[in-house]
Image 1 (tube, chains in turn blue, green):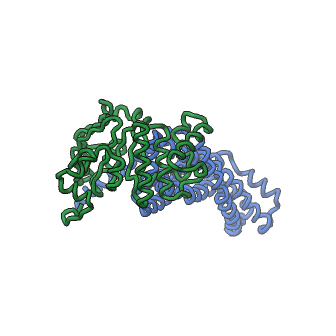
Image 2 (tube, helix red, strand yellow):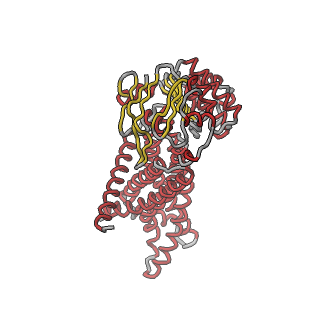
Image 3 (tube, chains in turn orange, yellow):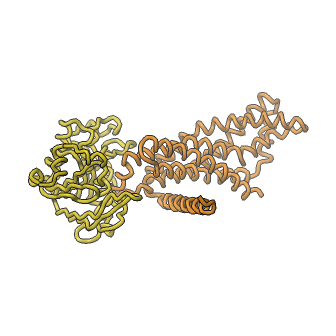
Length: 253
Length: 243
């Protein structure tokens, strides 16, 4: 086939899909408030039940970061910067990105599997026959729950991550506890924390949107649901990393 | 009440519906039969607005259905092939799904339990989740949900698929009773001839996207159409194998 035609066809398909996803996202966002009980249920599922996995990830990441910075910093006599770098690294980058990726693994897959199963078992068609807009009943609560919860998870993850660094710093690297905590706060600026929370909001949207989009458009049968689940996790993970690059460029250039 | 005029729908190069003309009077029970893949489900999905027809019109009470879809849906109920109960909700919430929007929880639950009783399910089922029910019980619960808000139009999609003959006969009898009791207009799609005789006032045979034959259930057995007679008798011919 003519390569120009091939590129043209791919461009049209990409533009068409981007348009579809944008309309889907807009319809999901405007449905906020339609079903508050469903929103509360999703906040429990997406937010509260993700706390253990995000907390553990942050704890080990903060601890490993402290070890790495201490050992790397020793090469140029800069081991003392461990508390500040752990705090800044967790708040700006590792808290939101790793928290987002863990939520992507847990939530995007669950949403895609649940909505995909509802699609193939005609439950979504049943909603329509019961005069209920599936976008407002299924998509909006998940989308808003993720947008609201992921920043909170990121905030909690930041604190636990810094605590992981403190645990290692005090117990293994010989830091004084009070000095470690004081140094963590001394170099941390408000924007370091706020930028991470804002990133969390975007990552939450990406996670829920991926899960909902692939779930609502799942193909037939178990294979269709399986494909939707895999695609949702891959899209959410890549989306988070790409969005992180763009947002970091936007916030810190 | 419901009128289809020249309804056509294709998926890619496959013409699924090819100029369907069909009229359904108020309170009538129409059964649409036809082999697998002849467009029965697509026909229902077009009426429900889940598929957009390529051509033709769907009229309801003399006006295009598309312009009064909300009003139509408010008085509509449907039993899906596999019941399509919401897995995340207990049975009573499934049944009362629509009612919960306009009445208090306690009252909606009472109506749901009454509707469950109407389809032969006891109050102990109300708090179970769909996964805990057998296929036959799920169908009954689905039927209770379809009739929960006393609809004027009910669709039944393959109501006896997956059921043993005794349970299928019970569901058929229940559907007929409900249609008679409520005076609702009903469309059933099936390829189960026992359902046709039990549920239908009138039958339409769909073949290759067109209405091949239609008439009353009483006329069906004497109809000269060879394909219809083969369909009734369950006779296979080599020429049908591809369909």
